[in-house]
Amino acid sequence: MTNPRPTPDPLTIASFALLGVLAVLLVIPLVTGGPPPSPYLIAGLLLVRLGVQFLRSRRDERLRRPASWAFDLLLIGLIFYVAGNQPG
Image 1: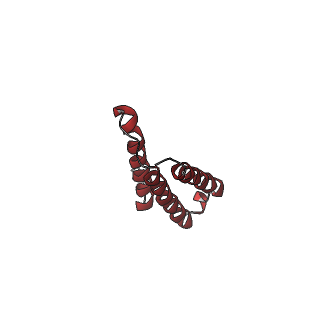
Image 2: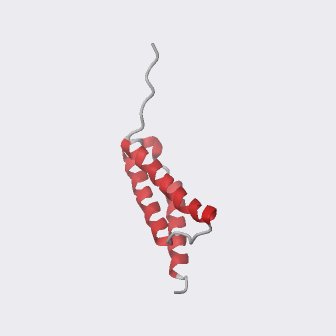
Image 3: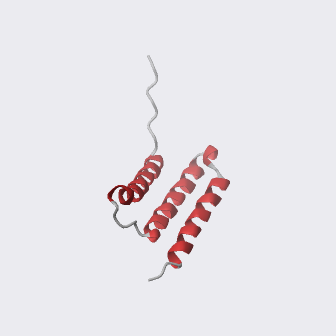
């Protein structure tokens, strides 16, 4: 008898769902030619995802990736910087 496949925990599902929402928000304007989503919305979703990643790492030592978190924070900071310097 084979072992059943383990199911992902709720935080992993939430992380993938956030990535899916981000992907849809970023791809739809490319396909339809519509306006891009608000940079604040994108940065906010990335911040939420970073929080989920941090919570996941508290439960599993193998998921501690400080370099990845630093890269995410740098990306979020750049998005806020660009959004803050847009005219209008």
